[in-house]
Length: 86
Image (cartoon, rainbow, N blue to C red; front, side, top):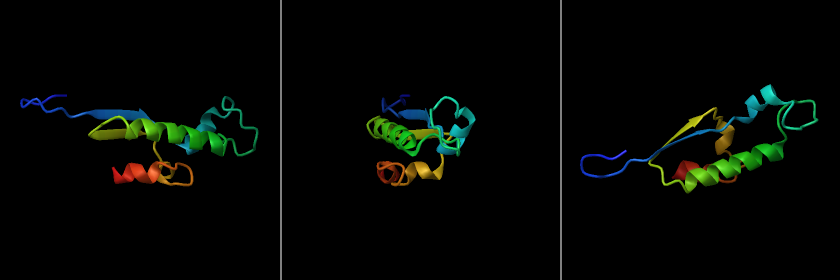
């Protein structure tokens, strides 16, 4: 989006699929544990990849769908705290 002055404003949107929602597709993520969520390492990898993409996107505003607070916690996402700083 550009303004009359030519300045650009970049918006990015991303559907994160919060870990809590992975129970709905548990037959497809291969986790054999009884909790039906994807494996912790799968969540960590998805969150890390998503965060890296967002941090390098150059966006002025980011809209996140299916996001949980855990996306910003270092335990599941090492880049989560950095996202909050940006």
